[in-house]
Each structure stands twice: as structure tokens, then as C-alpha cells.
Amino acid sequence: MDRAELTHLLDTAERAPRENRARMLLDEVRPHLAAPWVDEVLHARARSLCERHGLACPPRAEAPLRAGETWLLLAGPGGQGHVVRLVAGGAGVEPGPAAQAEGRRALHGLHAAAASRGRRIPQDVAMRGIRVRGGLSRMEIEGGSLGLSTAIATLSAALRTPPRCNVAGSAVVLPDGRLGRVSFLAEKVRVLRAQWPDVDTLVVAAEQDHIETVSGLVRVVPALDLAAACAHFELSLESLPRCRIEERRPMLAGLGSHEHKPHDVAQWLEKSAEAWEVARAFHVEGCAPEAIEARLLAAIFASHAGDGLLSRAILADVSEEDVGSRPPLRVRKLIYLATATIDDDVVLAERTAARAVELCAELSGDDRAVLIGQALGTHGRTLLHAGRLDEAEPLLRAALEHHRNNMEAQWPRSACYLATCLRHAGRAAEALELIGEALAAAERHSEHWEVADTTALYLHLERGRALAVLGRLRDAALDLEHVVRNQDLAAAYPRLGAHRTLADVLARLGDADEARKHLRVCVDIARGTGQQTLRRVGGVAAAEALLAARPLLSALDLEAAWVACFPADVDRGHVLRTWVY
Image 1 (spheres, rainbow, N blue to C red):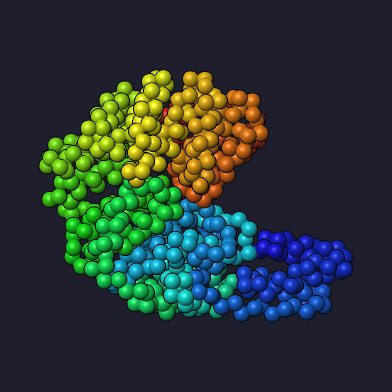
Image 2 (image 1 turned 60 degrees about the vertical axis):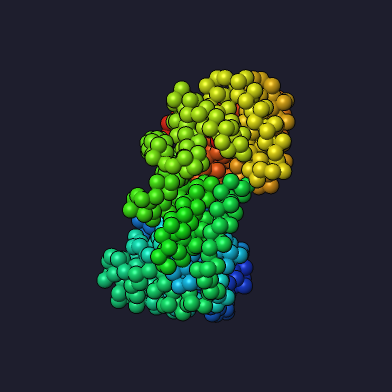
């Protein structure tokens, strides 16, 4: 039974016209009144009804917090609020994509706080994700106030120590570990005092406003950063495993080797958090070059995971002063920033990538050889995403030729980007020829190039799409099904892109049942809690199905999938014409 069901039973019992009906409903309720999510407000209501009908009411259970749990205070503009338990991993309700994104930012803050004290967060704890336990069957949390709760629950899990039960927190956690103010503080505190009166202390950011409105209800403790906040929960960062700076150097070297490896979303986020922790450790020790290198890796790993917001937040920590005297790092920052921005602000991404290309002229021979192809390719991709195909093509060709002549392992991926541009420009036959050459190279060198297997999947996806444009639907399906078979997770790219295109190809072949399965994968991901870019792939698949007027799924389901991923004012037609993934 969840909170909504229990509340419904109490409502029905309250209105029941006959005594025996009310008692029957309360008999159904009473076994659940000792559940840890039954707060004082809910229990008092049940208690009153039980007394009215002459029934014994079980006492509200003492439900202390366990390791990995803490309180989460929720409220909104209407004054409605609720207090739930936030849990690091384990069973519970998904809090929604916005909450997961804020949780990742908070975890980077926790890694920063640990590193500043020469400690580390165990990776098996850091990437558990967050869940909510509060007797609710569905929840969609917006806003950053769960940041402090996420960090506290994760630290508690790492230390295997419960936080203090009478302390709650409400603050944004920034990637560097500082705390930020939240909204609706008074509403949250009023709900907290009503539901869980034993919680008498609230930790907030030092910059939090309107503290005077709640100071008579709870003891308010301002904290400048996460380290200061943890002490009030009786959790110590000093109890985490030690990690000396000498141990961080091989960590950094190992992280650098991951930039072009195949990883799923969770692995990229794990590597981003690890790199960020290494960056903060070097920063504390005054090792600027290593700190900047690790920050850049943390940013590009977050971007590979599809979390452009987190990537940009990390890059904001790399100032012009940091990279001004190091041109290669400056160019890399611009390339990574353009990559992180491409899905949200393609105009800014294009300007940023163009500046990276310009600055490559200032690089030495070796540095230029490494970065110019990446800069040209990134600039070309921003123009491709903007639908400016005539401008994108020469840049993507230049990147391809540079990689073919200087970095052979990279040229098949560059060929894939150019093939996408050609297909969008109505030149699918040219794209198909280029893909064949690149795919042969990737498969020929699969034992020697770490990137070859992943690149081959991208090329199979692009070949399937080119074949579909040319009307060779059965051949297209073979390539697309190859991608689905050879990547484990549906919520990963390029597999999700293959699901999207298979939904269309199989429908055109008349196999509605199989097409529906692939479209359902896309719709479920669009309405799920994954990374924004992946969810938008699903949303585009839904919009394409609506446009094709094929009744594979209900129009309401398809429209809901689109609305879950894109703002109301977006030009749907433009998105569908220019969509790359």
C-alpha cells in the first residue's frame, strides 16, 4: 500500500454511510499504520477515525533513519508540501529526470568536498542513484533543493552510518561543494513540523534568505559548504578512505585513456565524477596543469553521458586565467564547451567551436595535429545540428581528411558525421559509399583501435538510415538490428537511434507488431528519467510516428512523450527536419 491508497481509504471511511463499512475499511488500513512513511499528520487522522468507530489504532512506529537515508523537504508555489526519505540506491520511487540531474551535480560537490580533505568516495557508492521513499507511487521533483539531501544520503551510505534523525537539510549543492539557497523554505518547514515533529534542526546555505520566517519553528543552522553541513548530521568526511596526491597521478593518466572508449551513460557519469574528484584534489595541492586536465576530462565525460548542464557547470570552473597561458587546454575547453552546448543552444555552440578552430592557428605543430581535426569536426557538427548543411560539409570533410592523414583511428568516426550531413542533404547514395569505406576500416582494425567497435555501431546505424532513405528497407533493417543486438542497454546511443529508425522502417515494411515494440522503447525512454538528449531521441521518434499517422501507439501516448522532452514553444517541424541522433 502506498500513501495515496491509504489516504483514499481514509477518505472513503470518513464518508462511509454505514458503520460496518467504515470499520471494514479501517481494518484494511490499520496493518499499514506502522509503516515508516506514515507521518504524524496521516497517523493522527487514522487515529481519530479509529477512535470514532471504537477500534484500536497501532501506535506510529519509531522509524529511525538508516544508513543511506535522510529527509527530503518538498514544497511548491501552491504551498503544498511533503516530507519524504531520500535514499542512495536501493528500492524506492524514481524522482524524475530533473531530480536525477540535480543529484548528479550534488554528487560532484560531494566528490569535491572529499578530495579537498585528501579523501575519496568509493565508486560503488557514488553511482547508486537516488530514490524516494514516502509512500508515494509516482513523483516528479523539480528544483535543486534535493542537492544537500543527495549528498548526505550518499555520504551516509559510504560510511555505513545513519545521519542524525532529528536533522534535515535543504540546500542546492554546487559542483565545487558550496551550498546555495532554495525556494519555499517556510512552506517546507511548516510541513516538516506537522509531519515529523521530532525533526527540530534544519541545515541551510549560509546565503539562504527568509530564515527569520522559520527560526521560531526549528533551529536553523547555516552552512557555507558541504563539509560544514555534514558535521551537523554527525557524518565526517574524514572517515572516508584516504587518497594521497601521489595516488591521484596514475588515476589521471588512466582517466585520459577513457576519452575515446565505449561506455554507457552510467559509466560516463562515473568517470566524470572520478575525474572531478581528481581535479579538486590537484587544485587543493596547487597543481594547476593536472587540475585543469582533470576538469576537462570530467566535463567531456559528462557530455558523453548526455548531461550538457553538468558539463557546462564543470567547464565554468575553468577560467580564462587558468587556460590563458596554455593554448592547447584553451582550445580543448572550447571544443568541449561547444559539445556540451550543442543540444541546448546551437548558436552559442557554433560560435564557440568557430573560436576553437581560430585558436588552433596559435598551436605548435604537435598540438595542432591533435586538436585541429577535433575542432573542425566539432564546428561542422554544430552547423549540421543547426541545419546549415552547405556550411557544415566542407568543415566535416576537412576534419575527415585531417584524421585520415594524421590520426587514422579517428577517421571512420569523422566519416560517419560527414555521411550524416550528406544524407540530410539528400545525397544518401554518396553517404552509403563513404560509410562502406569507413566501416571496412573500422572492422579491419577492431583488434587494434579501442574506438573501432563503438564507431562500427555508429556506422551501422548511419548505413541503416541511408538505406532507408534509398528505399532499401530490408537491408536497412539488418544494419539497424545489428546495432540493437550489439549494444546492451536500450537507453544508450547508438542503440536508441536504431530503435527510433526501426520503428519507421518496420512499419513501412508492414510489420506493425515489431515496429510497435521499437517505438514503445523510445516512448518509455522519452517519459523516463534518463539523460535529456537520450530522452529527446525518444520524443522525436514519437513525433515522427504522429506525423506518419501510423496507429502503432495511441496519439495521447505519443504526444505525451514529445511534451515530456521539449518545451512548448519549440518549432516541432524544425526539430524533425534537423534532428541528427
